[in-house]
Image 1 (cartoon, rainbow, N blue to C red):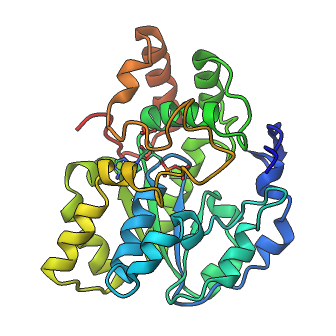
Image 2 (cartoon, rainbow, N blue to C red; image 1 turned 120 degrees about the vertical axis):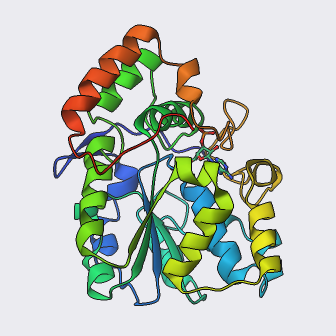
Length: 293
Ligand code: PPS
């Protein structure tokens, strides 16, 4: 497969986007969600793959072991809005899912989510990660992924992050938008990446109670063991080694999986500038992110 050309971001209804996520727009907006669908909604690099795999194992790990070893996770949990030439669209993959529930991933900001998810009262699992580690992870992702715009150097990338000029728009608007929705939509469960790092088992328990699942202790143990960073990095079905547009020799998808790697990237003055700007944009004290655990 020929690599797709690097896209140029443009303003799409007030959000910075690229054609790979807007080309199939009408079909995405017409997506027919079902009441038992589970939407995994995140800003990029928040731990989407991690939570997708947790959900996949919880629902299908014990009943369909073949699926785990033969179908890459990104096909088991399609990325709804992706549309890259010569590959099936995320929307088509989602339509073709034969599982119940269907697990579907999106990075769309709240205002772009297809209306049927709300109409059908589908469950939504939202994952969010502190801005500094998200920015670092997104930077390295841009280096290795041809579907992303060229990230440029770290300091200009960080400025673009603060300016909300990332693909899928401003991190600040995205996390606030989903957080606000959680206050009025009871079927939305919000997970912080930092909590998942600190207490994976406890977060899986909370997720299960949101989903109404009661796995046995043995099943839970299997899920916890399967979703560690090291086992997902080794696992060809979860480490994106089957995806041609990602060059894992530039930077692996399963890169570090830590809270606080930002300290290896931010200079003292970048950090001060970032914190100052953050205070202006993140005024809601209820939405609190930890940058270390
Ligand atoms: S994407 O492309 O937006 O869907 O990326 P996403 O999956 O949201 O985020 C990728 C980052 O999540 C880290 N990750 C994990 N951390 C800890 N444990 C586990 N099991 C795990 N799985 C994925 C992954 O390493 C990326 O973070 P960085 O900081 O780049 O390592």
